[in-house]
Length: 277
Length: 356
Image (cartoon, rainbow over all chains, first blue to last red; front, side):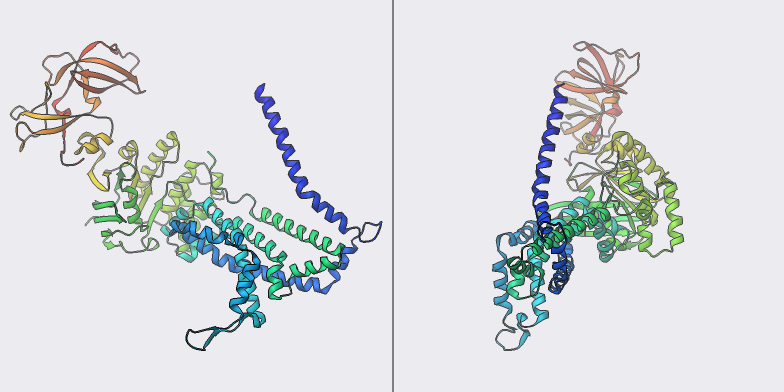
């Protein structure tokens, strides 16, 4: 009897915390949604959304931020996956150092990072003791600035991307899978593309989603490097308008949730490694 | 020349010698087990054959070719891991066909071979399932099929049954042995389970602390252990320090007790110290005065172990364990009572004093 009442007690408390958690996340969203629908006084309408989407600046900045996010994700995956894989496989002793490095963006604020980037890359990189330029000042031209901002975003997203990938690799025992593939004649390229990447797909998508969210909403790097990104646009819009920023914020939330739903759909049922006994 | 040869293999990690001067010749179609406690170097040796570790010294020759410095994907060896290591993103059929796909076999050939392998492991209808939909035993059978699909030159099994429960372990080891014999494939099997090694192997290499202690058939390893370690690691054992007292009549003494042995004492002197061993099942109750090695004992403890009953007895200052087969009509002595026990001259084994 005691056990049953204890179970009920636990269940009630679980529900309480669950509902509290849901309210914590849903209430602000609900408030944003309700506010965004009240642009016309006394009428519930999508006018704020129409107005926001009608602004060509919105599409320009949003598409540019998506471009930056996609590039950041591609380069991050290219850098992080082989690094995390190699550390798990050959250099486990380096894991703590790399983990520490990947946590640096939590300690060093974005403002410091962007000043560092501007200070170093607004001057040409020359061969020491000569005046021969290897790299021109990156802040002086568009491609250079894009390179700088993507590099900065990679750093900001590193804690999320590295941890996601590393956790994914931990769950599938990459070492044994690698050895199994090697014993069957596979080379490194085949192992990474056919064995490792498909098995850390969920982790990669999680890392990519987090990176996407960071890049699309980022303000500091984009403002100081002077690029027309979505973050500064939303910030400026918020200073002059009331309803449109709420509409765009809600849209961004919906996009993020849609992305998470797609991840669940794509990876549903995969990644289970334990057997049924 | 043997089909697989490991010549003077050693492996050093930093200051630790994991394997020292290891030598082995394995004939085609033979199954050899590496048996020993954790850290004895058995898995390291297997991994050197697979190519996952490079020997610090020595040569590994498979079918006349030195492969010691070849990458694992160039050796054509099949490997079965303790943790199954099936690719979670692939179906059973794709797992089995993975190596064949790498070898660029035609899709018809792959399909045919995969079905052959599925039939071999009695899982013909499981091709479309994913690893997580299988039990541990089924996963390991798929891993075995995957390793065999490419017709490897050598099959390596690294504690393949350790993660399974006792009943499945027994049935699966019989299945592994049957498949190995059916295909006539050369295999190396790593285990720390003596029963597994004794039941599955043509020969066993007993390893300890990076060294080979003894190589022999299961029968020889069990009945004629050459070192104290082998004797103590394989089965239960009574071992004592004894002294040679009569070379003519092959008599050894342990304190006041005299034991006759059938072992050759040639080259030994009276007064030499030796280590002797007697298996518990070689000791019997007896009161016949004519028998060799007859002693009076006191029964100290009786333990029921299912098929056998283990009886702890005391002979003077010595404690001995003796085993007797269980049967429903077995009359066991009472604890504290006295009885006569005996063992044959052949049961008294002298262990190699140089090792352990």
